[in-house]
Length: 135
Image (cartoon, rainbow, N blue to C red; front, side, top):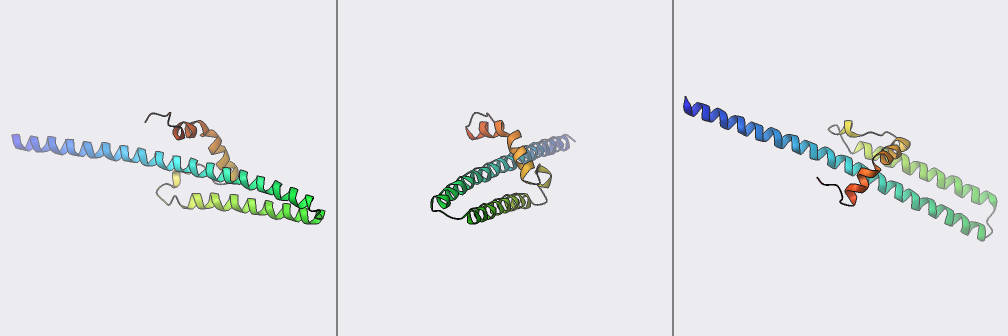
């Protein structure tokens, strides 16, 4: 009887250890997914910022070279279409890569909600990226 109790205590300790390990692993996985979302969104936002700078530089060059208003407006239109397509496809791809397991962790579904999510978590993101968050 005594060995049976030892065995039960061992099994209880082992399953408790596995349970806590699983819970810690799950928590860390969720943190990694959320951090990767924030990093990805910030990279996309930064690239769109540079994309926008290139638009204004190209428009200035077009105007300095004496291009017609029609060509400048066509360039603006095409550039805006390209930016909208880039925003839409990047968010769609970011959502699609999560798969079925992490679907509930995606708190955005389009560009505006993604930027709201990034703005909401801006402090957490900068804390993690600058190493001031203890974890």
